[in-house]
Length: 419
Image (cartoon, rainbow, N blue to C red; front, side, top):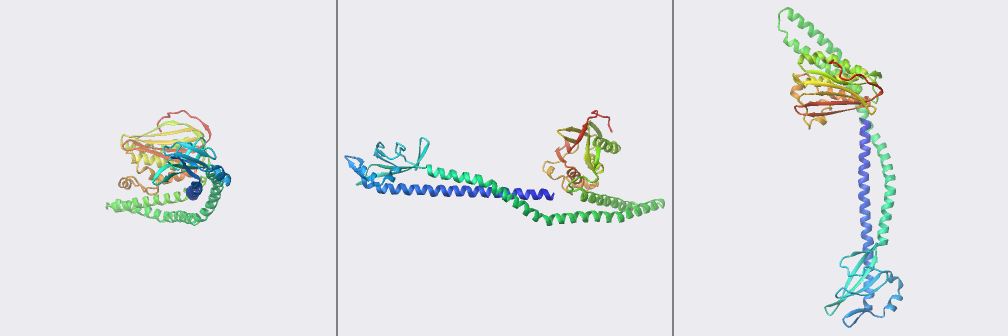
């Protein structure tokens, strides 16, 4: 759990850092674009003001007066495209690099493979527009600068994110260390408390049962003693669950592991529950059984399977059926327990493996549930490097699937007789 939290913190920080970097890059590109475009517009305004005095009229049409002398005295100005248009928008003269050959109304126009920044100025005399002076500059340098900025960012961003990720992983490790210590202390406390409670609870149960037998022999009502005995038994189960959960939750490997055949373990669990299912009138069937050798703790996996069978029995009404499947595939072994019970609401499915969560709280209390069964199942499965999922539909039933890594598969006949 702590390792998962540490990685979540790291990835969250890296993701946020990536968003910030992208946002800053976009802002930087936007600022660079604005500044370079503004610089081009200033150049165009300067050119327009400098070449305005070289324009004269020939009849009603504008033309450049003494153009050769004006241009050659300052050659760099010829880097821009200078055009004169009639009032009807007809191109009269053009100097410098080839540009857009029409009068442009916007600020930029595309010409071939080149984008031109354009400034069009009306030529007005005595309140009458006689033509237009149009100046154009290629945006190649601006666009190239933006491309270089993007390439540099793309090359540096992965290195930056790797550095931030490594730093975040180190810092998150320091941050979660106190939490890890607290959790370990809590687990130790729960295990110790469970051990300490077991002795007085065992004494209470023994004394209550002895007192109950004595009262029965004397024909005295023993109902209150039965309540005490039942409560002590339930508390003892709860203490044992706490101890088991403290031992297996967060474990990096199964405790007391050995090579086992899981099909034998499942068959044993089914056989142990058969009488209880028959007593309630619920069918318990094995519909598929394949065998595989698995490195696991037999006691813990038996507890996980038993908890799922207990859960299926509790929430399946008389006349219903519970099926069990064990099959192999893709290097994994799956255990499926499907009931035809009351089902689980969709909003509750993500929460059913949380400690003390109960879908039907009143029904769970009446049946003795304390909300730790499925939490224990998940902890055991996680310790074995597997996963557990649940799907359900109201009034149609619930399907639990445990998936575990396997070693050395061998198949046994399917559809074995009812356990």
